[in-house]
Structure formats: C-alpha cells, structure tokens
Image 1 (cartoon, rainbow, N blue to C red):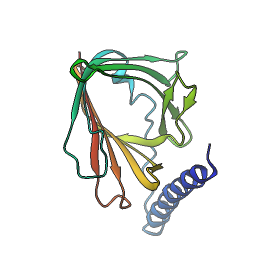
Image 2 (image 1 turned 90 degrees about the vertical axis):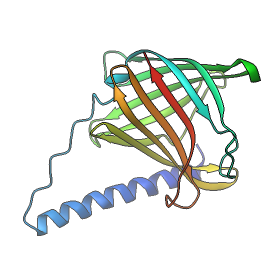
Image 3 (image 1 turned 180 degrees about the vertical axis):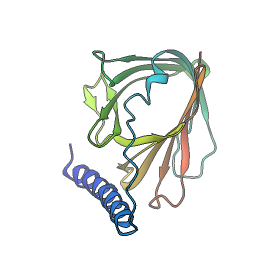
Length: 193
C-alpha cells in the first residue's frame, strides 16, 4: 500500500468521524439524543445468489467522452463462512469488440463503525485494491466512497447501489475530480434474475 493512499484514507475517515462528533454534540446541546446507529449487517443479503449482468462501461474517463461499451455476463454472490461478509465472482463479455472483464469483489461489514468496506480483487495478479470504498445503506440506497489516484491526480470514487428488488439491482461507479462538486458516471451494472 502506498503511504499517500493510507494518508488519504485516514483523512477521509477523520472527516467522517468529525462529522459524527459534530452531529452528536449538536444533539446534546439541543437536549436530544442522537438516533441509535442502524445495524446494516444484512444490507447486502439481497445480492446473495446468481445474477445476469449487463454492463455499460465508459473506458475514457474524466475527458468528456460519451463512448460507452456494453457487456453481458454473470455476477454470482455468496456469503463467506456463514458471516455477513460476501464474495462476488463477476465475468462479462463484449464479443463484437473481443473484450472480456473478469473480476472479484469482497465486501466486509464492520460492526463497530456499522459500515461496509468493498475491495476489488485481481486474483490473476494477486492484488487487493486499497483503499476500499467505504459506506452504508440509507433505506434502499447504498453509497460508498474512497479517494484514489487516477492518471496522476487525486479523485473521489463513489459506488451507488439502487433500484434494489428481489429480481433486479443497479450499481453505478462515478469519479469526481473536483472534490465531489460534480460526478461522472463511468460504470453502470444492471443485475437481473
């Protein structure tokens, strides 16, 4: 792990905890108790099982491109060791362009922070993506963030899970090069079964 990535991850977590502290203090001054933290340990249970995946991918990112490439394939999810952690095996193709994407995802729930960490794994190279995107669900929508380097500049990365039902779900990945003021969606995955 690069030292700079560690510092950036620590900075994002510090901002998160400072906002929680500010909210708690504001409630205490107003004489209110903050709502108890929600247990989100089963938020990704909807994913467990086998899905068909349709992906739209923007390969040229943060340059104003509208040239999307589409893929079809599978996204299969299982719980790990009867825990709240889950693992995804993902494989999609675009036969016309001879493109193939194979990926694995590990999702871990932290009961202390009540947040999920999502790691991408490259089993072919033996690499675990760091930092993970970290976040939680509010209702039927999950948002997860991290800060990374992309083509030599610091960007924010956001994953959003939405349109969740027993038969469908949607995941979008977006990048922001301006500190979250604007977002460019570059990956849309529609799951169905």
